[in-house]
Amino acid sequence: MRPVGVIDIGSNSVRLVIYEGLARSLTVLFNEKVLSGLGKGLAQTNRLDGQAVESALAALRRFALIASQAGVEQLYPIATAAAREAQNGAEFIAAAEAVLGRQIIILSGADEARGAANGVLAGFYRPDGIVGDLGGGSLELIDVTPDGLGEGITTPLGGLRLRDLSGGDLNKAQSIADSHVSASALAGKGEGRAFFAVGGTWRNLAKLHMEQQNYPLHVMHAYELPAAGLDGFLDAVIKSDPEKLPGIAAVSKSRRALLAYGAVALRSVLRFVKPQKIVMSALGVREGFLYDQLPQDEQAKDPLLESSWELAMLRSRSPDHARELIDWSRRSFEALGIDETPEEERLRVAACLLADIGWRAHPDYRGKQALSIIAHAAMPAVDHRGRAFLGLTNFYRHEGSLEQQHIPELERLVDERLLKRAQILASLFRVTYLLTASMPGILDQFKWAQDPRGGFTLAMPAHLADLIGERPEGRLQQFARIVDKTLRMEAR
Image 1 (cartoon, one colour):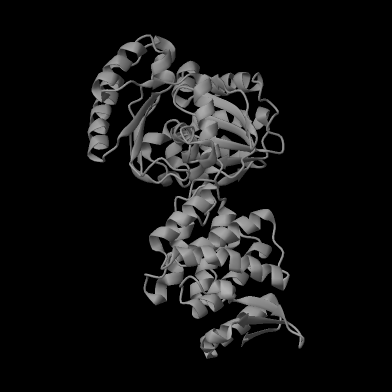
Image 2 (image 1 turned 180 degrees about the horizontal axis):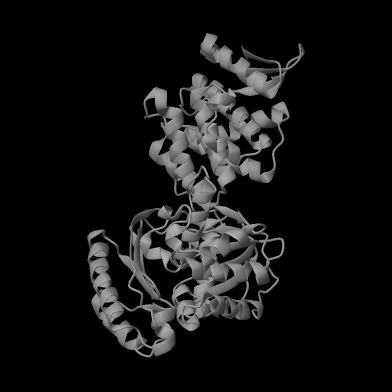
């Protein structure tokens, strides 16, 4: 797998992202942006600012060299609203192409919307809602469902453009935003659904919200803001001096000036698209562009399971054993009557793949380190509730104790049912690893049998009888208490 790169020439920033390779679950090797502000003043002059052009070209020269040093063979430069619409846009693109030594793909507004929607498809599992990509020059909106994409639309509501059109008057900016969003074909289409928010300004708004809520998981992707009650937060951002907002230190200084305009655009979305919740997406046009390059069979794969498998390959003692855990846990759940929803099954599979990634850490810290790796990994297609489940399952698997005082802060992100499943699965893992030493080829010889004396017996062939001992028996009884069953272990 060779590195691939995307250079995104936007209205506010110019960014290079290099990925490990073209895959269903993308891994970032390098990511850098320069806030050149190509779209600044465009609404008044219809031209790209000369200083902004020089900044962008300097960034492109640096990015071309970085990409070459990283061994990037496929480098995709894309340009959006400012370069597309400016009177001198073609002149800038020609200069940029000379710097990069390759053709720049100029995306239309519909292309941007489709790219953002593909980014959401790349980053979520069967998403259903409205995607909004807020850049410096425009806001693209598009309907996305597991069955396909709607028609994308573009509006002149990017942060820089909205500030210029309103002359810095936030009341006027709200009127402009309201007029465009209310008249769009997607007005009212978000009812009961998610609004997937893409773009740096909205991500920084979410950072601020996360800080003010004292939220325990500082991962932006899939962070959710309920629509109900969000008006007060947005109103404070719009009306307050950004430097005096609680938690503003979480937002970089270069991003603070446009926060209020991002809040204005989001308030229009809440008013007229009427989503049930806002879901932040860290993946957008760049990732969507690469997703579109994948064959359909790759696109159809579950990105959470793909990324979990990659971590298993990198960190587990035996990835094959991790795969065997999937079938073993399924057979155990079925035998013991532990039901699960399709989403719980999906999370169980991911937990099995991740079960042994902490083994290289010091024994006293394996649980905490594995929890941290999983909770903060760049894993797509899992919400924060699911992240917490996966991290806690691994934490309990190493720590053993399920006492309340030992539960990390992430526990508050999961409901009682999912927390119980984390404990059940972790307890099963604790029995399993003492019997297999994380080596493949053993688990398929185990089976659960209903015991005429009551309960169930974990049965294994006679030649594995010496695996039974005091410690495995002790862990089996811990598992028995968790599942509220009578359990035994026998060789037959």
